[in-house]
Structure formats: structure tokens, C-alpha cells
Length: 362
Ligand code: NAD
Image (cartoon, rainbow, N blue to C red; front, top):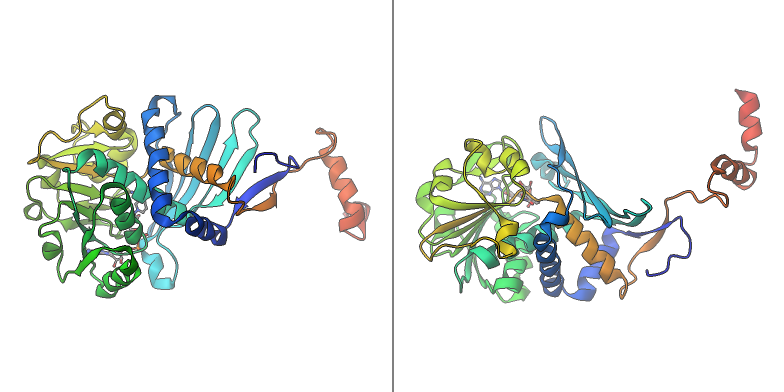
């Protein structure tokens, strides 16, 4: 992928090739390496052009554009969130994204990002937990065992050594599927009949449900001293998972406050509710956990820099794993200003009757 033979060719990573890439690298290695890229970009947070994502809300979901740039590369992701989708055989979350060269504006990569979103969300959660959870945390409760759940479990295992899972979902078959899918990865897994039982003895609680409402997935009495909460499913206005009282007892860490105040758990709180920025903890500018008895809460909503890190990682890995197709995405007339001439020349071989015929007809 180093030298592009034609200026119009953009490497495209399909869903099929993304799965092949994950297998070629190994899912845990992929997650661990992706964590490094995510951390690296959090450490240079001030270099990024940041803005809350542009969200188009509808009755049942949201479609979002998530752009950012570090001045050299520009990335954006198109992503949806439609909790009702699984009922019609669709994903709650699907995505694709682009990485471009800021210098000339040309795309360098177009890729599926449904898998990549699950991987980067899990990697970001694991990075947050590495800095915020108690040392030696091994047991994680996962409430909500849908598409994202296995990725979360594997990232926490790869990065901080979580090896005991306590699963709960309102649909028990989802927990059983998650248990089956993770059978080969060396976890001790308990499927729990209630969320209360799932959180018993957990060092880390991940909430990752999909429901477009202010839900109470975790109530205050379920959260004991010293726990780290990885709250991932509340990521849109009117879509939260935690009882407000939990926020009052926790040290809350967020990605980008202007976005999280609209979309995260803290949308339930006043605009001046104190939060700390995750990047400052990762970059060593702020302390993370204050002590073993404190409750830490990562109020995850997903931020554009994490997608940027993922796009950057995939582009780097394609150099040794050419799992992409060349996409004829950009026009490249021999003389750059002769765009119409290129169209005319194409008529000669693509349309038997050519443009003249069209012109006469009109
Ligand atoms: P999914 O639809 O595949 O799975 C959601 C699961 O939650 C389902 O199995 C469902 O039965 C379960 N569930 C719903 N209500 C529940 C409840 N009250 N208690 C227990 N389980 C319940 O969705 P997904 O792709 O796994 O995404 C999960 C959530 O994570 C979504 O809300 C999505 O928007 C969010 N998300 C956040 C980020 C981020 O960066 N913060 C990234 C990706 C997805």
C-alpha cells in the first residue's frame, strides 16, 4: 500500500477483508495494538481538531458523522445507532469510515467500520480501565450481551488480564451466545439470571445495552466501593443506563466534555457537573483513581479520535497484510482541469451511442 499506482485508486477494506485482517493478526493482538494507537492519540489530544459529532436524530435512532484531524491526516466515520434494528435482522450499530491526506484532500483509505467500531470501542474501554480500575481487577460483569460484548471482554483480557466474566442480558440467549463465542478464550464465565447477581464480586461493571430511553440498568445499590464502571450503552440524548445517584458517588471520566454532556450519562446532571478528561489521565497530567475504595466511572460515548486511531492502525497493518481492494473512487483526467474531456472520452467506449446522442435527444 506504500506506493499507489494510480491517483484515483483508494484502498478499500470490505467486511470480509476486515475479518481476514483480524484473524491474520489475531483478535487479542489486534486489540492490544489498537489500544496502543488509541493511547498514543489520547496523549497528543491537543493536536486534534475536535468537535462534537454531527447527529441526525429520528424517532428510533441516530445517524452520526464523526470527523477529526491531526493536521496531517483527516478521518471521519459514518455510524448509526438503532436499537430496534436487531428485531429486523439488522445491526444496532453499523459504520464505515475514511482516512484522508490533509495536504491534498485525497482519501487514503475507505473501510468498513462495523467491526472496527466494536474493536475500537472495546480498546478505548480497556485503555480507560487500565488507568482507572483497581490493580489486579480480574472479574467483569457485562450487562447487555449484544454485538459489542465479546469485543469488550477480549479487550479487557488482552490489556488488563480480566479472566472472569459475569454476564446478564434481558434475553438469556444473548448471554448464552456470548458465553459460547468466548469459550475458546480461557475465561471463566457465569451467565446470571439478574443484573444484581451479575455485579456480585465484580471489580469492573460494563453496561452495554441498547434501548432508546433513560433506563436504569445499574441502580445505586448495585455499585459497591472500589468498582470501576465502564458505561458504554448510554451514548445519545435520552439514552442513558445509570441511576443518577451513581454519578454523584463516582469520579467521572469522559472523552470530550462538549459531546459527553449532550450524549453521555452526565446529560442527567447540571452543565457544570465536575468531570475529568480521560486524555489528561492517559497523558499523565491528572491522577486517575484516588484510592482503592473510590468508584471510577468511564462515561463512554465514543469520540472521533478513537476512530481516527483505528483508521490509522488499519492503514498501518495493510502494509504487511494486503487485504484490500483498489477502489476506482476518484476521477483522474490526464489534464486535471479537463474533467469533461474525460467524460467525453469515456463515452466512446462505455456508451455505444455516446453523449452526442443524449444531447440531440434533449
Ligand atoms: P445490540 O443491540 O447488539 O445488543 C444490545 C443488547 O442489550 C441486547 O442483547 C439486548 O437484549 C440487551 N439489553 C437491552 N436492554 C437491556 C436491559 N435492560 N438489561 C440487560 N440487557 C439489555 O447492541 P450493541 O451493538 O451491542 O451496542 C450496545 C450499546 O452500545 C448500544 O446502545 C450502542 O449504541 C452502544 N455503543 C456505544 C459505543 C461507544 O463508543 N460508547 C460504541 C458502540 C456501541
